[in-house]
Each structure stands twice: as structure tokens, then as C-alpha cells.
Amino acid sequence: MVFLPYYVRTRDIWSSIVVATPIFTIAMCMFILNDINDIERDRINHPRRPLPTGSITVGKAAVVYLLLFGTSLILVRILIERGVHFIYLAGFLLAINYNTIVNNLPKLKNPYVALTATVPVFIVNSALAAPAIHTSVAIAIFLFVFGREMLMDVHDAPGDGQTLAKSLTTGRAAVIAFILQAMAMGVLGMHLTSSLRTISLGLILLLFIYSAAHWRRPQARLFLIHLMKLQLMAALIFLI
Image (cartoon, rainbow, N blue to C red; front, side, top):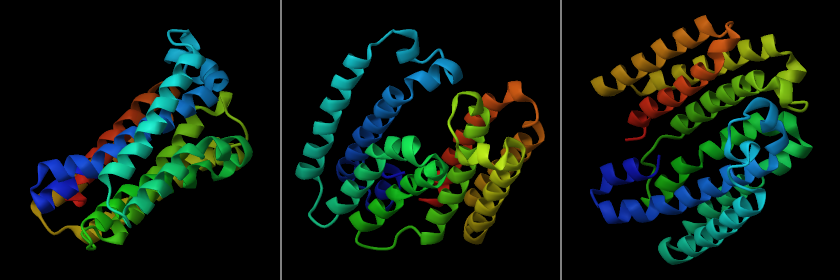
């Protein structure tokens, strides 16, 4: 989400790596911290992950987290221009405070993750010092990720706390989630400026229809959530 849009507009591969690398390590920090925090939930919902299986200890995971935390700060300090670095740090704060939201304000988890997912759009625009990516594309990402996160909480309901999906009931939450994703596709439909974007949106739509049609089958839900990652990859065309 950072490397490709920046490279397409600058054709400078080194600068593109520079602006993208801190996001890579910040994301790694977020996922490690999340796995440490969710170890008991994962024993129920995702028992094959490394921490629940014991293939890595919590202590070792914490050491890796701290190393990546320090690395992320150093990379932002060394590589990122003053002024742009503020957005990286804002994204960093959103990422590492995810577990605070999960533990204390679980109903806000879905929009919080969706907001965090839009940060790369603003990083690219700031790094290029121009509105290279339209704000409405960030809105589409927000809506789609919001919906995906709700569906993930429907799937993980047995081990989760009082999430938004649980408070709505899982059936109603799934309907709202797919409506949010349909709205995201509607926003992307405003940006069909090339045949490649049209093909991309067509793929996203086909996967959406398939996911919505098969969601009632609990055994298919994890596979469908993985398909939604493919939809996000297809949506990269709208960033470049």
C-alpha cells in the first residue's frame, strides 16, 4: 500500500523502499503484540498459532516485539523526512494501542482497525507532497476493512469478548458487514478510469458475491475471510 503507489509515481525504487520499510516493521510490532495479548482467545479460536502451540514462548515473542519497536523508531528517525514522520508515528500509536481498545472498548475494535488500515494512503500523499490518492479511496478501504473485521469477529465469537458483532447478534452483524463492503465497492466504482481498474473491481465484486452466498456455512468462513485479503490486493490497483 505504500511501496507500489510511491514507486509508480516516482520510479525511484530506493525511495520507495525507504518510505515503505517503517510500515513493514510497525505492522510486525502490531501483530506480535496482538498475538501476545490474545493468547487465551487464540487457544479457542486459533489453536494452531505459534503462541498457543508453544512453538515460541511469550517471553521470546516479547523480545522480538521490543527489537522491532526500537527498529521502527530508528527507521522513522533516520529515513523519514521531518513533517512526514508525524503520520508514521500516528500510525505507530494506532497500531500499538490496538490491544487497549480490544481489552477496554471492544465495540470500537472494528472501526479502529479500519482507521489504522487507511494510514498508508495518507503516508503516500504526504511523502509525495501531493494528493496522489483520492481521499475517497481511503474511505473505501475503511468501509471494506470495517466489514471484514466484523466478519472475523462473527467467526471468532466463541472466544471473543463483547465485540460489536456480538452486541448486534452475529447474524445481523454479518449483514451489516457485507453492506459496508458493498458501499466500499460503490465508492471504488467512482474511480473506474482504466480497464485495469474495471477488471479489478469486477474481481472484487465476484469474490464479494461468492463470500456473501457461502457465509452461512460456518466451515467455509475462515476460507472466505482469506479471500477478502485477495480483494484488498486487487484494490491496490486503485492506489496506483
